Each structure stands twice: as C-alpha cells, then as structure tokens.
Image (tube, rainbow, N blue to C red; front, side):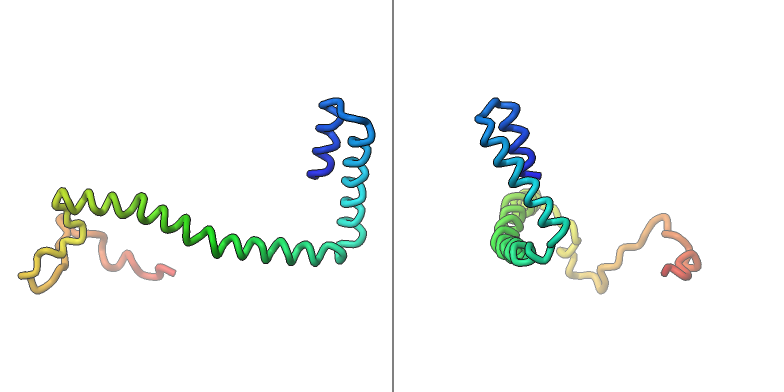
Amino acid sequence: MVFAGLAGYAVYKGWQREAAIAWGAASALTAAVTLFAPRLLAPFNRAWYLLGELLGRIVSPIVMGVIFFGLITPVALFGRLRGRDELRMRRRTVSSHWIDRDPPGPAADSFKNQF
C-alpha cells in the first residue's frame, strides 16, 4: 500500500514517468509476494515484531512515568496541600475504618449468582 500510494503521489505531482512506474512495479511485486509466497516475508515479520517489543520496553515505562509524575503526582500533591483525605486514613482512634451507609445499600439477597 505504501508503494502504491507513492506511485499515485508520483502521478499526481507529475514526477518523471519512470518514478511512477518503479513505485507501481514495487507495489505489484510486493502484492504478488504477499499473496503467493508469504513465507518469504516471515523474517521481515519477525524483525518487525522484535522492533515493536523493543520499542514497547523503552517507550512504555517512559509514557507511564510521564503520566504518573506529570498527572497523578501533581493532583495528589494538590489534594494533600488542601488537606484532603480520600481514604479517611487519619482517623486512627476508631477500631474500624468501615463506613456505615445511610441509607443502607442493596439487599444482601440481590447479590446471588453474580457470575
């Protein structure tokens, strides 16, 4: 598809005719190999897969770090500066951190056969 797109672009831009023919031939050859001899493309598939895994091992921790330190940490620091206690962990004198619901939640028998 890339070669076909380049061939179409060459025709659209009015490049030399030989360039459009070369891109079209590359497109036809690649399509023929893909359809009739896909085993020839297996090494390229493996290389592409390994490149993807390598990029994932490098990029994923960087993106997750940027999300954590750029979004979650500032929100948590801002909440802490405002004195918020979302988990209600500051009440250390109580025997339990259970919060009674008022009004009470759904009936216990409504949770049968959940799965």
